[in-house]
Structure formats: C-alpha cells, structure tokens
Length: 312
Figure 1 (tube, helix red, strand yellow):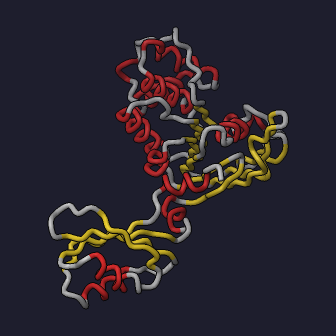
Figure 2 (figure 1 turned 120 degrees about the horizontal axis):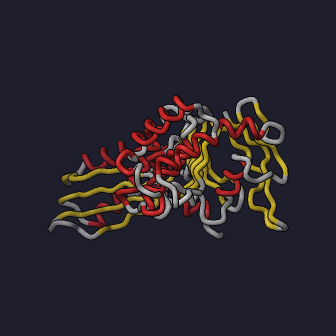
Figure 3 (figure 1 turned 90 degrees about the horizontal axis):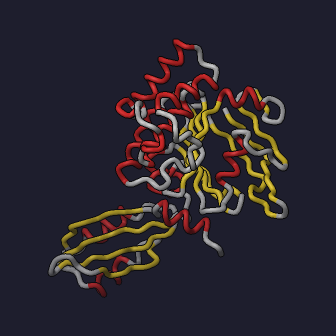
C-alpha cells in the first residue's frame, strides 16, 4: 500500500528524517512512536504531501508523490495534531463544507455526514458551534473531517494528545472500528495507546527507525532478557539463592518485600533464549518448599522504548 525508500528531510543543517525505509501493508494499523523531535510529524507530513522530501521516494499504491500528489491526496484522510477546524461554524455546516470541498455529490454527502456523525458520536451536537465543544469532541469532528470522503488511508498525528482518560478510550475505540476497513498510520508518544491500538509499531529516534514489529516481536527481541517472579513458603533466601542460581541463564536473584508472613518473594533475572521455567520448577519440586506464585515477564514496551531512545 505505502512504500517509503531512503526518505530524508533537512531543515537547514538539521536532519529531521534520515534515509528511512518503510513498507505499510493494506489494512494495517501502524503506530509511529518516538520522543519529541524524533521526526514523526515530519514523516507524516511528507507522506501526506504537506512537506516535500529533501531526497528519497514515497509510493502510495501505484502513485509516486513526486508526480501524482493530487491523486494521492484523494486516497488519504489526514488529522494533524491540532485539528484545523473553523470554530465559528456549526458542526453540521462544517462537515457539509468539507464534504463539498472533497467533491461529494448531494446524496453521497448527506449519507457520509450521517455515517460519520454516528461513528464519531456527533449526532447529538451537530447543531452546536465547533468552538463551544470540548477538546475531545473537537478531535471527533477532526476524525469525521478526515474520513468524510471515505479515504483508503487515514493518517493521524497524535490523535489523543491532551485528552483525558475517558476521551482517549473513546478515540481509541473509534480508531479500532475504522481500522477494520482502512490502512491507518498514527503517531503517538503514549506507549499504552500504541500497544492497545496498533497491529505494528515503528520506533523512530533522531530521524532513524530503531525498531519495527508487533509489540510481542519487539519484546521478544529486546536483548532476550526476562524476569521470573517466585513466591515460596518454607525457604530461606540464602538456601533458595544457592539452589536457583545454578540454573542456566539465571544471572541475578533479588529478594522482594513479602506480602504475608513466612513467604519468600524472589525476582530472578534470566538472560538467553531458553525458557527457564521447566528447570526452575523441577528444582523447586525436589525440595520441601511450597510454590505459591510463578510468573515470567519480558521487558515492557516502556523499557524497550527508553533503551532505544535514550541519549547514550
């Protein structure tokens, strides 16, 4: 659907996007993550034709942005971080105006306005002016604007920025509903939103792509380090450490504060590709300890993000 090759953008001497390659499949919800200034918005603006690349190419379906930008814009709905709304217009009048600009005929226009009002939860506020709406409702109007002519591709720049938790969930639900039918690219710095909404995550830092894959793939590939949490009864720390540290891959054993009297809570750091749980279980089974809890966790997306985007 979208093919980006060696895409580069300079602002004077500053390289905002540095020769990135990216392929986005049809029907995919792709999350573009990165710290502020990483190049997310610049990348989206080049894909949508708002900015011209310094070098590199972008192909959307059979069209090249260097030659067929008008045709490409017919395929894309774009919601910038600050939705460009006319605050003095009624919501209905605004969507009617946008539909006319996008070339919709009367019957199709009315049908799309009704459809977007229902999907984005705007039916009860169509008579209100845009300026009197909350930020969350304005974002919904912006989404309706971006989708009014039923584009194949939807590009959303920080769609939940500045919203409260309830509004974030509402926008997320709308995006998931849209994602059943469209290709969606959204940028965000809210990791939980990307994890809950996106099929695939691309992390960009200092203009370069530093990770690309599903959440699970990123976690599996993050140094192959994991933690195992154990809760034992009838074991002392020194005795448990002496037995468990002999297991292959166990590099560190820490004792955590017990929740109840008589229990021993351990946190094991395990390196390497092997699953340590069978060996841990058999070792514990050979003792007279009671095993109350046994849980393995990989690195969180937040940890991976920080490791990939930290200064050093």
